[in-house]
Image (cartoon, rainbow, N blue to C red; front, side):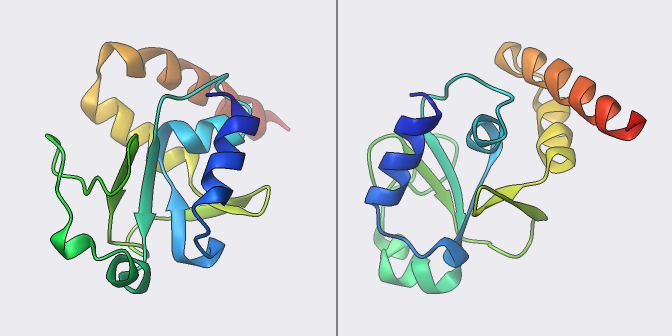
Length: 125
């Protein structure tokens, strides 16, 4: 899904913006550093986790809660740094980069290159 589709679907969940953070590919998408993403990776507050009853929700193969199709959640909001991007709490690029460097999956290599180039450009300004 593209940026507009991502935002529309995200807003359709009706979650208070202060109760979640957009992780990984979604945070790149909102910053214009990626053209599309396939899913939602979200870090939610304990309050939202309770409302969604994540404790009784199934987990996917990676150990993330999967309360909706194409949505992966973790419930440790506050343990990762974020920045506001277009009114949404998004994981910092440095945090995304660290995770992608750790995982080094084929799909992460392009993201690593894009993030590094963007951060270098920002440092030169």
